[in-house]
Length: 164
Image (cartoon, rainbow, N blue to C red; front, top):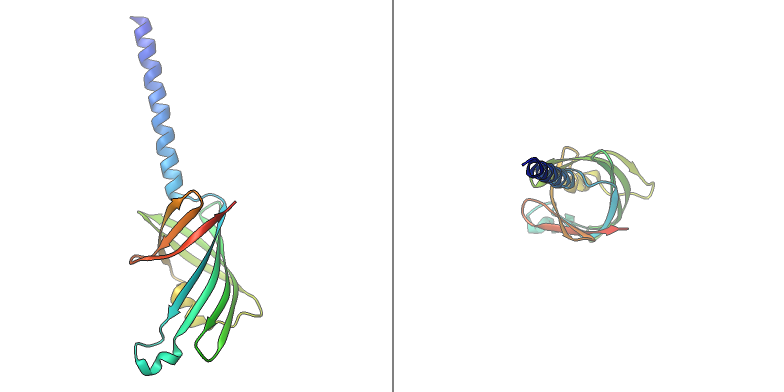
């Protein structure tokens, strides 16, 4: 009888440890990315107005985006690329600190301090249109072991390739 009780106790302890490990792993992977970086190429359109006559004010933004996720739910986003409104070309080259919080299946990014390169000529209203200073929500899911998909509430935005 004592042998059965010991086997049962050991089995229960093993199940508790296994369950705890699985729950910890799921919670950690859902709430914190850990330290890694990923790179994406993205093209965005900034529509200055829905008026056809004002279409010349629309800007196409082509960026290389590097997200560097650090410990403590913080990171750095590096933007480099070009924006063009058909008449003028703007250069984009800046580093943006961010923090993020998991909210269900979405992550709320809060963009903070921005460090501009002297070459950066992108108008601030175009930048804030895409990367709000207040917060931006992304649904981030793993496509495979090397790729994350960033989506807004409506559709996928870009794929971010994890750099090893």
